[in-house]
Image 1 (cartoon, rainbow over the protein chains, first blue to last red):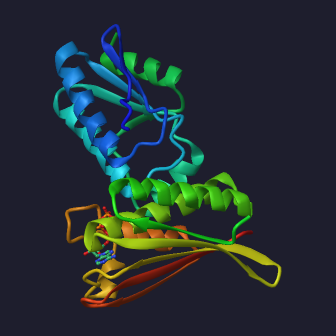
Image 2 (cartoon, helix red, strand yellow):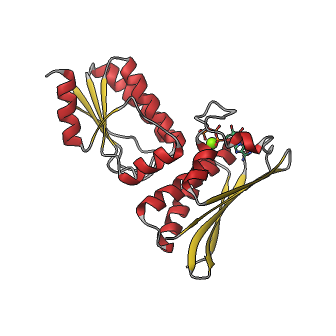
Length: 120
Length: 133
Ligand SMILES: Nc1ncnc2c1ncn2[C@@H]1O[C@H](COP(=O)(O)OP(=O)(O)OP(=O)(O)O)[C@@H](O)[C@H]1O
Ligand SMILES: [Mg+2]
């Protein structure tokens, strides 16, 4: 029943857009897929778009936060984009701070930011 | 609209079912998108705690009214191991499972009220409410 989160490669970046509600297994699978795709493609950056995510609990936030940390460890730059106001509010009220993560308002700005951070 | 409904928590996917039911109820009652997200998140945290710490349980969701106030009440009930120190689990960062420990203190901040009843080896009942403003 689990659907995979599609991961696209564009030049030297991976573009990931989470389009539907993740259950626990999808979230874990996403983490693994993202890291193996990063390894295979030798991409330098990742834009993680959350425009369609309308809620996040501590588990999903932890999986996504961990995925970002792991990708950073592997040497990639990650920009998270499109967080809805309601999701940003609930995350902060829950007490979850994704402080070290680079963010942008939307996918387009995120790509621009990533290009800048990568120095291209 | 049904005033009460509930979801048995048995598998991981029941966590998804419980929060979807909660979101639909919250929408029907008239909560805006931010409150819908708060309520959905709170239910997800409680359902996951049941699944992780008690294995089985039940999430009960109902529409409540008091005078001209409308709101939502959620009761998460299990017959699991119980919580030894209720004050401690309300501290940010306290976790026995390597989680963020944001769950229960977070739920308290997301909702208007939270009440924890727990007895060792008997189980835990957590009741949360939110009023429409
Ligand atoms: N239904 C329950 N039955 C027994 N113990 C519980 C129950 N719910 C919570 N607890 C205990 O309370 C602690 C704190 O719960 P809380 O949800 O705040 O954090 P967590 O589940 O450990 O981490 P997080 O929710 O951030 O992933 C848990 O580690 C667990 O020991
Ligand atoms: Mg928890």
